[in-house]
Image 1 (tube, rainbow, N blue to C red):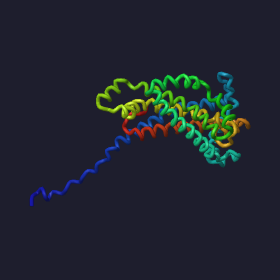
Image 2: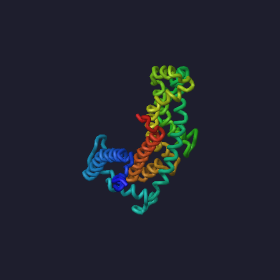
Image 3: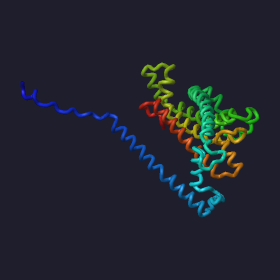
Image 4: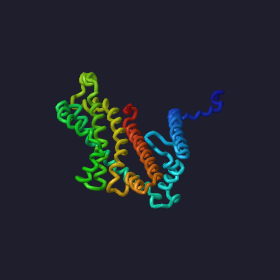
Length: 293
């Protein structure tokens, strides 16, 4: 028996997961992003509080003495979410209103995506279709959604469908124009290279054109999703009793400025989270491909 066989086996080192450094790095990046984002809201809250306490007058004649303090708005926001702090009819009702508004935004936005993306691709690939539709689209596009609101009430009626229609109008043109621009900006040399490599004309669309245009399409989707939350309030101001826009309307009628600002903050947070979810969905679908602009 040799000496090497009597030597005790050396302990095997436990290998750390290969993804550990990457996970730590991503966590550090996120923490750094949060720390960079905090100073501005904190500064605005301090200026807001000082402005209310000092009765500041801002440009355009804004009288800050009539605004509630950040603490009062925070109390109202907490009462909206969980109840038990103020105890009025709005206590604990936030989630009902938020759910109703989110469903309307999703429906209007999804309808805009279903129409605008295919239409933008067709217009970008077909010159006759582009020449046929482009003048009409650019004629209708400048009409503000607020001008469509009274007409939608007359031709559709009160309720969810009118609001969904307005959200659709707010989103469809941003998606359409970005899709069209993305498809038309595909370099001709890229198409020539694909043809030289044997790509069939029928396969060029989803193998070359769409991958090249998707970053701009995603940019249009993000813009349209933000506009959807903006126009939601317009659609929910008339004939709807449940929704964030309806809540703002009721608060305005009762002169509850703390409730108005609290719901405005909720809409901002909802739009921000919706954008983050859209970005996350794109990253999950894209994998390692750089589809985000």
